[in-house]
Image 1 (cartoon, helix red, strand yellow):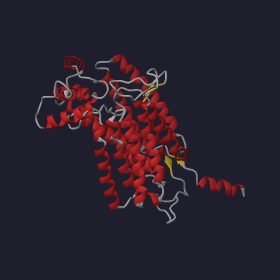
Image 2: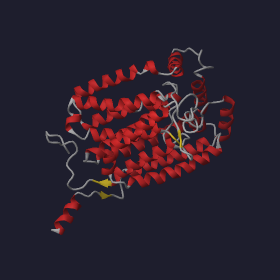
Image 3: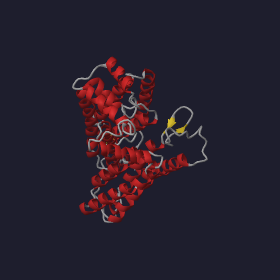
Image 4: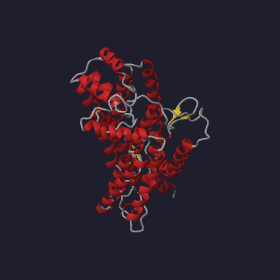
Amino acid sequence: MALQSRTTKALHRSKVRKIHAGWLLFTAALLLTLLGVEAISTTRPDTAARQFALGIAGIAAAFSIAFVPQKRYRQASWWLYAIGLFFLVFLLLPFVPDSIVHPRNGARRWINTGFIDMQPSELMKIAFVFAMASHLRFRSHYRKFNGLILALFVAIPPMFLILIEPDLGTAMLFLPALISMVVAAGAKYRHLLIIGLLSIIAAGSMYPILKPHQKDRIQALIAQVQGDDRFEQTIGYQGARAMTLIGAGQVTGVGKAEAGELLRANHLPEEHNDMIFAVIVLRWGFVGSLLVWGLYLLFALGGLIAAVGCKDPFPRLVAVGLTTMVISQMIINSAMTLGLAPITGLTLPFVSAGGSSLVIAWLMAGILFGIAMRRDPAMTREGFQFSEEGIQ
């Protein structure tokens, strides 16, 4: 009897692989972090040293979370989602002391914990993916329209709260993650079309609640596309400076010393943070941009291979959602730096200077590493092969 019990447990226990796709995304994340440290050091060596230390902390956190059993993620998913919403609401409470929530440039995004400024929207990205993966495990949720509508309404509350901080860039990341997870779950095509249209309507309906400066940035982008330069010295200044410096990098870049002089002469705002991609292209040219995009492609490859290797629907959807979050953020940041999207203050994952943003990016990498590292138990059923009753 004891032997039978041990055999049964073994059939339900996942095995750890030494060689797996997680090493691809780990390598990409590590190189991106080191590249970010070097780029930040162009103008801010002290900040670069802090970024390096935070990167080490992030890597340690990543390997710690990689060994957490995946069922713990599923069990905690809705609790994490609720906690994330609580902190997003807490940010917006007017009676919270400035010593705890100190607005920066009119934005209430950070909670001072004493040793690091925590950005709840970063934590919410992981919590949202966990909650959505937990929801979409059930056939009645991904194969029926009502279940997909509920999924859309899971995305709207964090998007709305983050948007009014205001943080348009982060709020934009939830829809690509939602759509990719619904597609990966195997939703019906007609339902996907309706959800896509509803997502566009939901995004458009949020325009009236944008802050005046956010609307101005959209207008500045439109004017720029039309060849109108009247905003270049006002709301479009940051974007215009970034594009000028990117052009100066040409094919192979100008080197560290000259890049530092050009950055100081052009007064590029947030060159260590939102505009770090402009610094990379200035220093290493078009070659540098290809290197950055290539590393993100490697990261995406590792994440998607990890997803494909899962029969269990929950980790598969988590892998798809987190990978989409990282890649969507990279695309938006690159686009706004190149003048193809309005500037939203969105950072470049693993590269831009930041505390919670860097650590959370590494936590995402750690979760993906853990998914790739584990081989499904022998008794795991094929992903999304459910009975009509709809329970895995």
